Image (cartoon, rainbow, N blue to C red):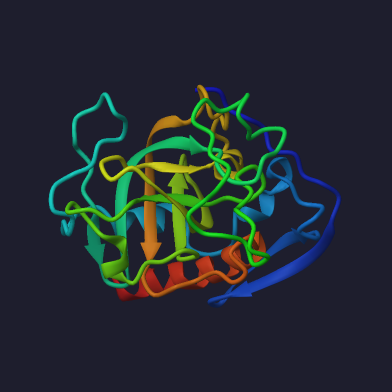
Length: 237
């Protein structure tokens, strides 16, 4: 695995106060933010260890299990908790959506110019700059729609003692699980190259039921709402 450093752009100092916790962070306009400068995605809120403590056991709600890749056996279950579902898998890189210098037909052999869910202006999501999670398309194995999950639902992504919050932004194959955008990989220090990047994990995805980031492309809104929902998840489990 190749670790990618995260650059921090010059920005204004702000204070976040979420669920009784305070933390200093940086703010910048959405236009100024890029996938390489989104350290603010590492939001205040419960720690990775606190969240992982709550997902040690699995109450399986999927009808069977998912593969992490085409060549692997089905080993990943979707599990139910109070207020969320979760799974533990790998991370493949999704570069679909708006065409950018990092996400296009030349950089990604599987590139598609659309995402299942769109930005507030009606355009596809920008995988390079917007952290988002891919959920399996509805099937007999599991249907995310039956669990209060939709485009924009907030996901806590946990990897290597880091937590970021990102919306559900796209849907993938019906038999594979464990995928997130180029921007999500960068925020977590994972190689974001869509052709050879990603990680075998473990990566934990906790999807909060009946939640929605609005606008879906706002990293700051995802971080703020995610921290609140994560604390509620800790308190209720």
